[in-house]
Each structure stands twice: as structure tokens, then as C-alpha cells.
Image 1: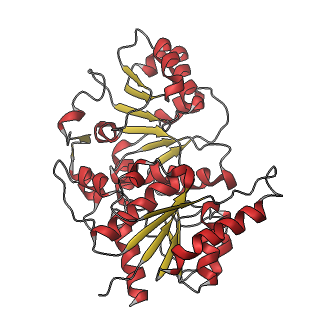
Image 2: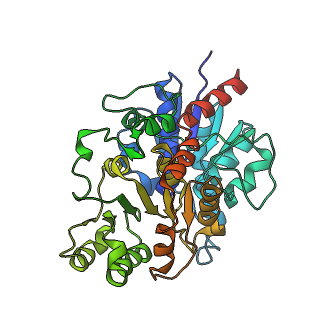
Image 3: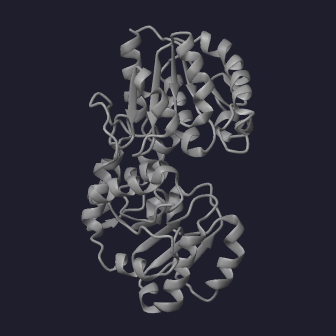
Length: 380
């Protein structure tokens, strides 16, 4: 099959950049012709710095009240800068968010087929703008709250090759068609996870009790930190039942370390670039419900207690969490409060075995391959 030049457009947060670079990486590794367009402010993003494909940058504006007057002029400038990049493409893939707006408009103006990847269970405003004009829309989760075309397949969120290799074990398999959920579930025996990589052995404190990873993201989540603190201070017997790793965020690390001084069943980290070694060893994860963390947790067949970020646009984190809950993979704590009560209740009602099976069943490790194959099939 002939390789057609494809442009992947993503900017803003890691939630858009990570699946975007994963898709571009897959296209490149499959022998395809791919380029990437992102924001100038993302030029230091590690995956773009070491990319093996051409990367272009522009300053796409965001629509905010303060910048409403400047928005049209900034949009036109970004549009014009994207035109020569888009002109060379056979197709353009938008990963969502307003950073994609100028390139998407350029693709429509030059009649380039437009493809959308939606990471969340609620479609973002930029993707809603382009949805009717797109050749195809690829979903990570079924959309909630709005009707959508049955022709929009739920293919999952693209994952990096290095992540997929880690799932397959040290040395990894290069086949993205292998089920990561199956890989993770096969690593379990008697309801307990087998340690896959040697560096997971000391990931959690030694002792007895299920291992819980609390992952508030690279910046941490103060709300979740306080819940764990409250459980420790007000429900000490419950707290001591488990072994914990708390990723507190770098700015909260010193405070959290001081709070848990003397408690041998918890390890506090600010941020660990190799967070997936904790995924491998954990029996349960407590976290937000962004598309990225859910995709990775499903891949490791991890049961979850999800605490959606309460201020997320269009409550998309809550809808993501409800998808995992309805499948039986998670419990959801939907609150803005920091009290430990809901967490204590959730911990007392878990069936980790069945939740792990449900989580692994939601894994879609071949998302990038299926998206690329669909685009190639259209282009002929």
C-alpha cells in the first residue's frame, strides 16, 4: 500500500500530546510518512525533541475572555503559518483542543481529509466544531451526554511503543496487536500480581497488605493528598491495612513526607519519570480520571478508585470515570471535599479480582495501529 503524507496536530497538555506523538511514532515505525505540528511552547516536550519525524511549530491562540479581542488576528497568523505545512499533506489528524483550530481550518480550506481523535467521554469544543466536516472521528471512550454517529469507532487512546514493550515484559514485543489487557492479566496468579520487571521489587514498602498507588499526576492533586492524610490520621487501622506509594507532586512532596514521617507502610514521591514500575506492582490505583491515566491503568488491568477533577471542562473527567465504573473497573468518588469518609467506604467495598478483569477488558493497545490502518484504507 502506498504511503501518504499525514500530519498529526496536537498541542497544549500532555493529554493531547502523548497520544498524538504515540500515533506519529506508530506511523513512522510502520514505514509511513508523518509530520507533527504543535505549539511553540511545546518545543521542549521530550517526545518532540527526540522525534524521528519532522516537527513544526506555531502559536495557535486560545479563546479566553481576556484575549477575545486579539483572538481573530492571532488565529489568522497561525492559520497562514500552518498553510505551507498542511499543503504538503494527504490527510490531517487533529488530536483535539484549540491548538488544532488553525491547522484544521487550513485543512478544510485546502480540501485535505480531516480526521479527529477524541480522548474523552465528552467531546471537546474544537472537535465538536470539526466533527461534521471530518472524514472520520476516532473515540477513546463512548461519548456520553450527546448523540453521535454510530460510524465513529471506539478504538482507544494511542500508546507509546516503549509503554507497550514494558507491558510485554523486559525486551518487549513489537506487536501492537497483542492485547495488553491479556498480558497484564496473565501476570496474575491467585489474585496477586506477578512482578514483571526486576525494578518493581522495591517499588512499595515491604510488609503485608494490598499495594495502593496514589497518583495525582506530575503536579500532584492536593485534594487526593488530603484524603490520604485524613485516612491516616482519623482511620489509622484502615490506613495500616495497606502499603502505599503516594505521588504527591513536587510542590507538595516536602509537606507530605513530614506528615507521614514514622509511617513505614507509605512511600512519598514527588514525581517519578518511571511511574509505570508502580503500576506493575500495584493492586489498586487511586487517581484522577483523565483519558491518559485510564488508558494506562486499563493496560495493566488495574482496579481503580477514581476522584475526577471537579473543575474539568464539561465535567469530562466525571464522564470518563463513569465509563470505567459502569464496566466494573472502578469506584468513583465525585466530590470537591477532602474528607476521608468516601475513600474509607470505597476501600471497604472493593472486589479487586473482578475489577481487575473488567479493567483489563477495556484495554485497547492497538489503538494507534487501527487508527492508522483506517486512514490508509481511506487514502487508498
